[in-house]
Amino acid sequence: MYSGRTGERLDTIYWIEGQYIGEAINEINVFMRDWRNGKTINIDTRTVDIMAAAHRLLDATEPYMLLSGYRSPETNTMLRRQSSGVARNSLHLKGQAADLRLSSRSVRQIAQAAASCRAGGVGRYSGSDFVHMDCGDVRTWGS
Image (cartoon, rainbow, N blue to C red; front, side):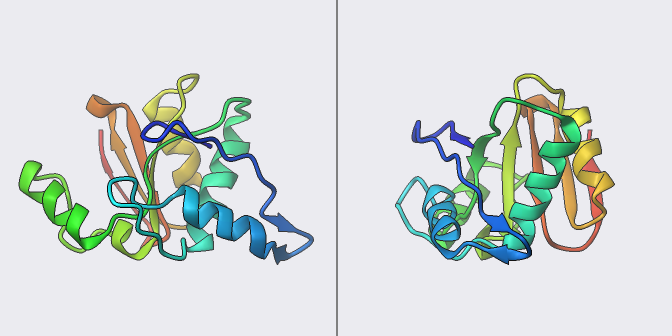
């Protein structure tokens, strides 16, 4: 992944032969931190699994651009004041969601790949050119 907010890059193998690799998961937790205040949380590996599976289905060679991973309560409250599209109980607050972009694929293509995993929520934000993926209930929204 590449962070569109911090400029950082993450290239890691986080799972081998049925086992998550603790050091890699820790790197993901830091990478997906709230970039506004540096706060971290344990990112739910189910979300990372959905992201990885969708990326494989897309046969993409470029890394995802991460726009938002974990959001602290302070950040979520600030964003809610600025936009009606930010959920009060966003799964970003629990480390269970990510907002992602690929320049080589459309929002529709990315969302279709994520939705085909049938493992969580998928939101299409075509106007802002990103897809939300989470490990919550299976559902879709947006256009």
